[in-house]
Image (cartoon, rainbow, N blue to C red):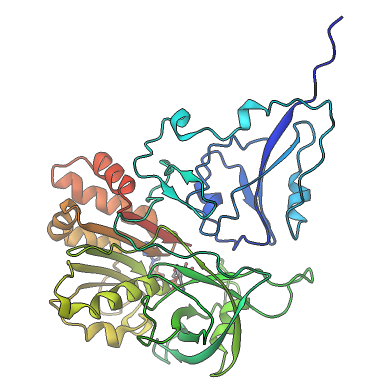
Length: 427
Ligand code: NAP
């Protein structure tokens, strides 16, 4: 008679709730819809996850890259994962358990997955990871980007920053209450790059009595500070007063931040982000496409270039910026004061009483010839930030411009992704 087979072991994919900043990137990236979330945690369905690793490189914190050996018949359930405040330790497996890990869930090596590793990046786990090829944007930074520091401060070890400025950057007569908030880190090291983000821990607890999870905001200032040479940075924060369905809802962190006074202190984690980074080489062009507060990283990159005008090393800057009206467009005044030969500004106003509705993708089509020239220059990097809904519209517009120019968008799109030259940050 045959001996009973040893129980199979599964390398279960899990998300660390202590580090996760709930940015939704993994759920959007997962090609098989194995990742889901409730109001508390992001979780991975063991019945669906095939260990393809597509979600790992885009995760800004590395919280996605956690694995536990469990019996295949007894994985951590979704309900268990929803209830976690922290990841469990490794389970002791019975001696009889198979020493073979179930093959269908072992993350494949890049070679096995047939992925080009020539542009692989080191993420903070120290593991070389090949870029995922299923997402619209790149999962690696441009080749000349500076090295980012990430996860220097975590939920259990936040750093305290002091508010040194907080003022409104939209007209008072509009509903859109957007604030420019400057945080100073004093003597605490907080190195950042344009395109990175930080997490803010709002005080208090949620409806379940748990501390609020961190909310993520992009830097609006360049690497050398909102005020050059100071250890500070700025954020662009819109006060949330309604939910996605238009019902009244008070955003926990946005209201906390917008109401802060000078000298108040804030708990900060991060920095995060190792791909949405600007190129560092001379002659690099930036095509920046944003809506509303998605302008934060564009302001950071533009300011980086503005401070370097005298060096004469800047490439071209082209900006497509969407807002309802000019009065709701954050930083409108300072933006319009920038020299025209420094930045090519295209404003898409969707609710201007004097003009027909226009979105950024309409202007991309209107400027097809200049967009095409930039797209064909290998020194061009493209950044898209803002509303989730703009992503498809922008991709369609870029495709139309390229196709009308007689080129193959599929090939160019793939090159832009593989070379870390097309980046999305949309929510
Ligand atoms: P908003 O005021 O709601 O919208 C800005 C403009 O985008 C409006 O003119 C809007 O037009 C237009 N728009 C709507 N749907 C569009 C579509 N499918 N394609 C192109 N344009 C479209 O913007 P917001 O409230 O500031 O939101 C900005 C987004 O950026 C938020 O989702 C935020 O989470 C995200 N974000 C913020 C930061 C940050 O650091 N603060 C960083 C990254 C991303 P209509 O409303 O007239 O249709």
